[in-house]
Amino acid sequence: MEKQQQLYEGKAKKVYATERDDLVIVSYKDDATALDGLKKGSIRGKGVVNNRMSNFLMRLLEKEGVPTHFVKELNDRETVVKKVSIVPLEVIIRNISAGSFAKRYGVEEGIVFKAPTIEFSYKNDELHDPLINEYHALALGLATGAEIERIKSLAFKVNSVLKAYFSALGVRLVDFKLEFGRTPDGNIVLADEISPDTCRFWDAETGEKLDKDRFRRDMGGVEEAYGEMMRRVFGE
Ligand code: UDP
Image (cartoon, rainbow, N blue to C red; front, top):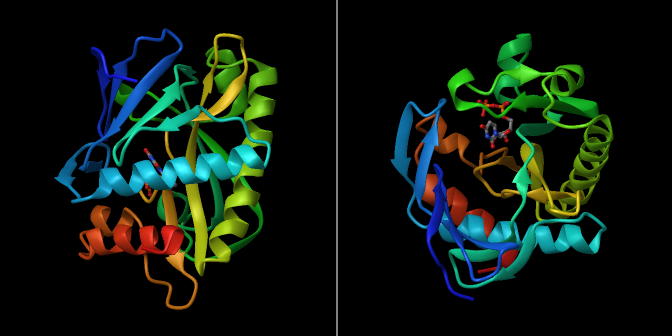
C-alpha cells in the first residue's frame, strides 16, 4: 500500500490518504510537544518506538476483544489504519495519582487507587482540552449515550489488559489517555496510539519514570526511557 496525498499533520503524526477510501497511513514523527503546546522539541527515535509499541499493544487488545483501528504495520514508522471519525474526547484512565490529578486535587503522586478512575477532556486546542463530564459530552453532541457507555467499558477493559501486561514486564501503568473513532458502519474502535507519549510508566522496582514526563519535566534521559520501554516490550 502506498501513501498518497497528506490529509493532516498533527503534533506527533502525519496522516496520508491511500488508494482505498476506508484506509489511511499514519506516519510517526520524532517531534514532541508538551505543556499545551508551549514546550516543543524532538525525541530521537520516538516515532519508531511509538509506532511499534502502539501496534503491538493494539494487536494484543484485539486478541482480548477490544476492536481497534489497526490494520497493518508497513515499516518502523508507518502503519495502515482504518479511517475513522475521531470522537473528540480524550479518555483518561488512572490507577495511581500523578500529573494533573495530583495537582488538581492537591495530593502527592503515587497514591494507588482502590479502583481505576476515568475522566474525559473535550479535544479542542483553542479551549485547551477542558475537563468535561459525560452529561456535558452529551449536551455538546460529542457522542451519543450508547457511545459513551461503550467507550467507558472498552477503556476499563484496555486498562485491565495493559495493567497485567506491563506488570509482567516490571512496569507500573500509572495512567494513560485513549481516543476512540467511529467506523462508517457506526462502530466504536480504539484509535490514535498507546505509547510512552500517552501513558505514564514507572519501573516497578525503582519507580523510575519511563515515559514522556522526562521530556515534560526536563529530567533528561528521555531517549533512554523510550529505549528501555522498547526493550521491555520487544526484548531488543
Ligand atoms: N495525556 C496525553 N495527552 C494529553 C494529556 C494527557 O496523552 O493531551 C496522558 C498523559 O501522558 C498521562 C495521562 O494522559 O499518561 C494523564 O495525564 P494528566 O491528565 O495527568 O495530564 P498532564 O499532567 O500530562 O498534563
